[in-house]
Image (cartoon, rainbow, N blue to C red; front, side, top):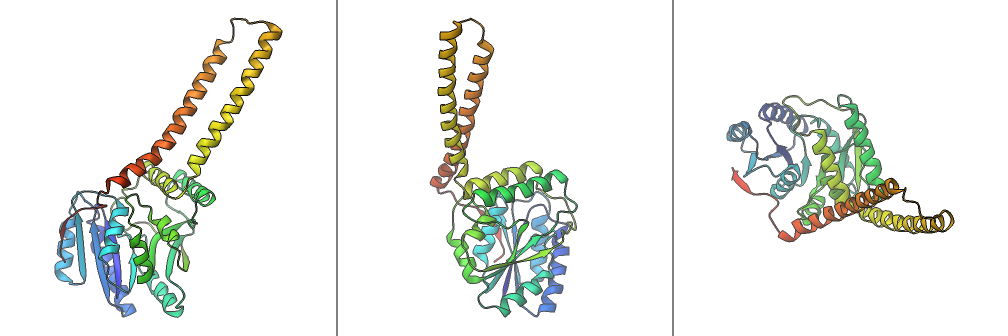
Length: 307
């Protein structure tokens, strides 16, 4: 059986289209599907649509959160509910082409050593240029400073064996970044490239700023580089300050002590003050992560489920 995990947030228009497309693929593959839709606190009629679809097909399960906990929580909840030998994670807007599942399953059947087949976009047609630029910058930076390698353009859309899913579920941290976790647990993974596909209905809930925040979370969760940068910049500034002190003393001994120079003094004070605030901010981000982990709050809360 293949468990199909589908996070949903305000996707009432996309769900019926997605379900029909997946049913066509299921019939072609001749496999048994288990659908797990996770309603992440939607404000539209997403829950009502899920109730209707599940009433007509016993293979459709749904979970409805008590509020919006985010896509990462929805992915984790879906993985916990899955029971299939194979598990796939897909977006409901059909930007993850369902027919790719056929090739993914064929690859896993043909190679017993292969644990996961992922997907990666080879282009970002249709996206704003600034979003594409920062996305490429994020992957380049992440792979330079992180302990894990995140493939450029990699999607959450992948087909995994149960062993890999169980390993992912053992990583039960509150602050989650699935792309990093998929890479961190290891296991043999191959990626299928594909052209970018526009969503079939509705509007994306991911703005530029939310994606930027998500990227920062990913870097902090899987890299200590920002802390190292803060330490290096602080040490470099200390050495620079010593050098400037020597320059000021020599200048005073040679040319006297004129009253002019207060603008440069103010500039130095502002520079050091800004530098201190920046490094404190970096430390604060890591401390906030520790704070949230020590609270031991649940990653999500379920208000309603059909099974």
